[in-house]
Length: 223
Image (tube, rainbow, N blue to C red; front, top):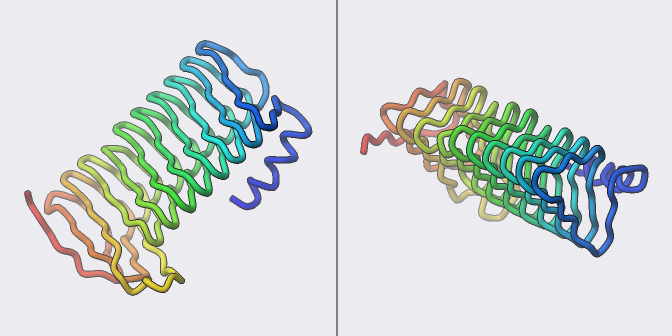
C-alpha cells in the first residue's frame, strides 16, 4: 500500500485527470480514457461507465457506480471506497476507511485496508487476498482467494468461499492477548488451512467445509 501511495502522486502529475481541493463527478454512461485522481476531494463515477486507468483520492471517498469498469486500481488514503453491484476493478486499497464491494462485483487482484471494515456482498469475487489490519472482514455469500486479518475478526456468511488460506496474524497491540472472533456460517468453504497466530474465538457451522485448523480449537454450531 505504501508503494501505491507513492506512485499515486506520480500518476497524478504525469497523466490523467488531476484535481486539488475539488471533487470529481463522472456522469453515468461515460467512457473515460484516462485515470482520475484528486487530493482533498471525493471521486464519484456513475453507473454503466468505464475508466481506462486508476481512480484515486487522498482525503476523500471514492464511489464507483453499478456495472462500471475501472481498468486500474481504486485507491484512497482517508475515505470510504464503495463499488456498486456488478462493478469491476483491478485492485482496491485504502488506509483509513471502509471498503464496500457490491453484489456480483469483481476485483481481479487484492482488496486491502488498514483501518476499516471490508464487506464483499453476495456473488462478489476477489481473485486474490482480502486483508484488513484493524477492521472486520465480512463475506456475504461471496468468494475470495484468501483472507488475512490482524485485529478486526472475520465473518463468512452462508455460502461464502475462500479458495486459499484464512489467517489471523499476530498483533503488536497491547490487547493482542484478547481473542478476536472468527465465525464461519452454514454452507461455507475454506479450501486452504485456517491459521491463527493469536488467540481467537472460532465458531464453525457443522455444515461448513474447512481445511486444517492451526492454532485454535473450534466451537461447532448448527442453528
